[in-house]
Length: 527
Image (tube, rainbow, N blue to C red; front, side, top):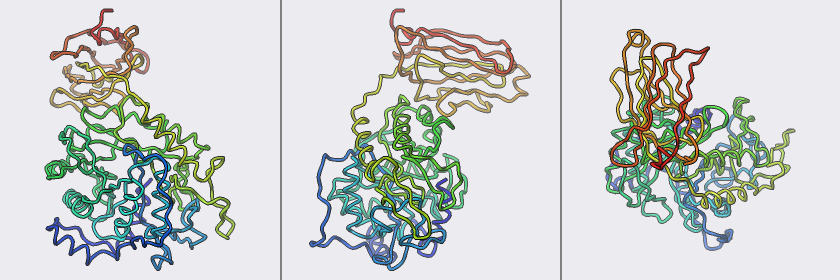
């Protein structure tokens, strides 16, 4: 969905974007920035009245995506983004909603100050600013954003979009550039989180890479391994770095050396497993779910199935509940978004009763007041910070089969998460965890018909086991051959076999078989 907007945005940005080159020295960067950027957003004058800094401190464990791309005639001398797809601001704008602040400029100090005051009210301690490479006008407001963020106790990091010319080399250059120019600012977000590829706990940047499975705005597809050398180079920088990718598949961590995953937007929780991808994350990687209050982009022509009604806050509650209910503890929760007005996913307050003068009345938040999502966000932030997650128990699972495919999933009695592939026979078509829900082993039909025996072994972590109950697994397989599954207790230094199941039967349609294991045997307790 967001990629449709990306194509429109790139057309608008192409006139002012500059090509990305390998990073020069810091002194050269300063000179380049001064000559290629538009004038910086105005700094705050002493006489400008700003909203007070009040209320509890916001949480650095909750972030919101923030868009600095808006402009108007008063501040910028032109309309920017509000006139997208032929709309005529200030009354007629490219959104299903009208902001309470009107068709504002991201370079207006009063606007940015109000945004930071609202973010503080919502308990959001980090904003993730949309970044379109080195030079475009979206970079102009960054110093002002940092200045106002400092005032209101907000931290700032960046969301690297698939701009024209984005490559692995330019990503490394962007990370160095961002740190060189903004890293010394007290508002620049530094995280002490660790990952398997960034194990040191020193403060380091955390950067988000949108549309990681595409190289640039042309949707040039890439695999996770395309980014691996770049990730290794970022991790080796003196300041280090954590890079968070979008595809909801755990192999992007292992193959791409990313530090964690986020989803940006999940429109339909009942499709594609919702947030189940969290369980596919391997050990020592960061789970950063993104939640939406709703989505409405009908005026700019998005497909009907992207319309997600807010339902007076019910959609937001369902998103938060799903994101926090995977059994995996989030490092951060991100809100999509604070002010993406085109897609109607914002928590920023809208105007009530506004119309475009041409017969269209802008939407509002229904039964909620304009600042209703600020209040709801603060409530969810408090709930998130007060939560505890159950302990996890390590186990090992080995699957051996002569079938063309076999899956293993948990039916009841617990949840598995954080899978790590220990070994897999060469020549397998698939040996992975699909969407966090099931282990999958597949070989070619020809090999299965020839009776070839293949094996894979995984270490997993079980959550929510009840010592007095049973863990129920489901073995499913094709009609050819048979499958053997061995479950190991792995609490010590060596895995100990607990139980082995064999299944070679054929039923109508699918071929499921339920395998029951006393949870106490995995917990190393007496039954």
